[in-house]
Length: 370
Image (cartoon, rainbow, N blue to C red; front, side, top):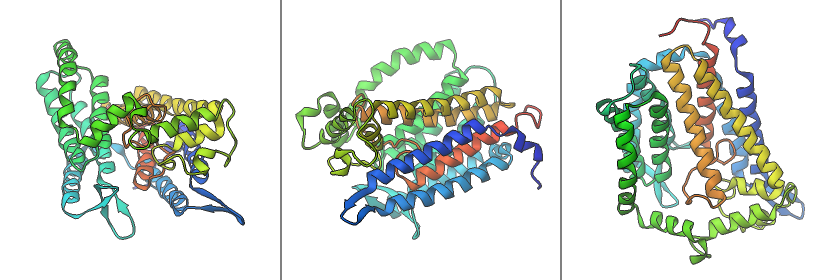
């Protein structure tokens, strides 16, 4: 089916350009994080080149997601959901263990993380369920929507991957808040959730409990569980206002900062570019998220509006939690910073979701509301 030429006039260029800028900034930061000084110059770890390849694949995926009619995702929602469930279950039997967690499927040419696909699945299924009616959610419909999300989140947390599992719940929770609930449901949630949170402590693994205790006081284990956050705070603090300069960060270049190319990538940026560079990055993220808010507001159909809202919360929670974690304001969890942290599956999904939001924006004038 030929592509309607009018679509090109409705591309949200600010969103597209900001996404490319974020990836370029992340690649530059990754070059520094993966670099190692030698007498003959800089030696760069292989994952920097891999990230560039994933970025090109992500841009290609973004273009594909831009130009198909996103309304077809309504019919694909449940097949995508059950395929994702099947892949998550297969991880327990055929998964590849990395860093003590079985989260990946070895496809030969790459390691694929089904939890990233789960984030797309919950967006599509959640948007389909929530777009059926306009009334606020009562208890029955709320439990139905949450039940779908808990299936995916439960399988992911079992791997164990608490960060990605919580991401599923928070994405869906943001979509539910945007959708609205009845006053009775809202008042009940305000009473029940604070009572249930302390009980979650008994379901955490020992290392997850240790992370929470370390968050409260990192100095209790400065060479163990508290090492990550202490080194991160030293790196960011030593950057001052203007930073030490590109490739001049001592904490990252001398390998004191752990996971500097993944979860703590922004600490590398903070040390080298200082408060000024960090604020520029956060400002770019705010501009990026604001464009999604505009697209969700202006979408013609409810399904498209909920899709854009879900993608907004997908990025919003990751940005909030990762930056809070690096600054010592939240416990350390395995949630990367979109476009900045290294990760093949995550980079591909990030670009594809940007393409999906652009798809919603491009079609807001081309058909009647459905």
